[in-house]
Image 1 (cartoon, rainbow, N blue to C red):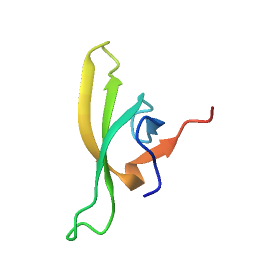
Image 2 (image 1 turned 90 degrees about the vertical axis):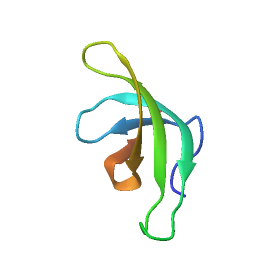
Image 3 (image 1 turned 90 degrees about the horizontal axis):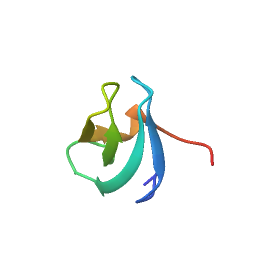
Length: 60
């Protein structure tokens, strides 16, 4: 898997930044998915699953 648990990631589509708090790999999808905890543009806490291709690493 490309990303690690507790790694800070960015959603490519929105630019939201959050922490990777889970990850999964399914035989039918062909790519890992990651559970991200982040804050949206309105300041609301959000959590959701995203495909690896939707995420990028935030430089530390």
